[in-house]
Image (cartoon, rainbow, N blue to C red; front, side):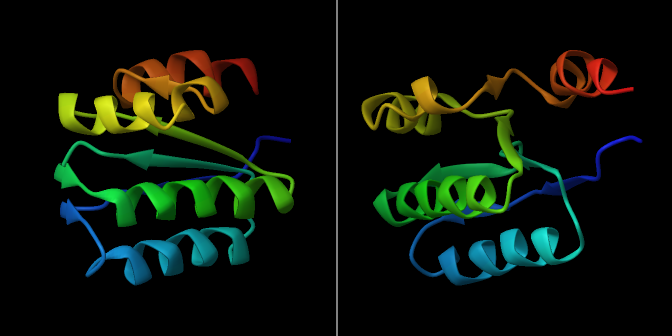
Length: 109
């Protein structure tokens, strides 16, 4: 049986004004039975410490539900923030959705 994959794609700034919406999207994905959640940062121009905290919370929430969380398409600012926080050691970050699909989804079929 194939895993249920859901994609969360924040837009613009991932800061304190958007964190609640982002966390709700993660919860909704889990409620819909997601086994794997991909956060696609393609349309995120900037993330602050609130966004970073939301990523950490998402990692904990998804892992607690037995799921897996991945990130793709990050810009240099987001990459630097994730690396400074050490999150690049905790989770897999993909160049883009294509790489995610090739590396993760092709191995689950």
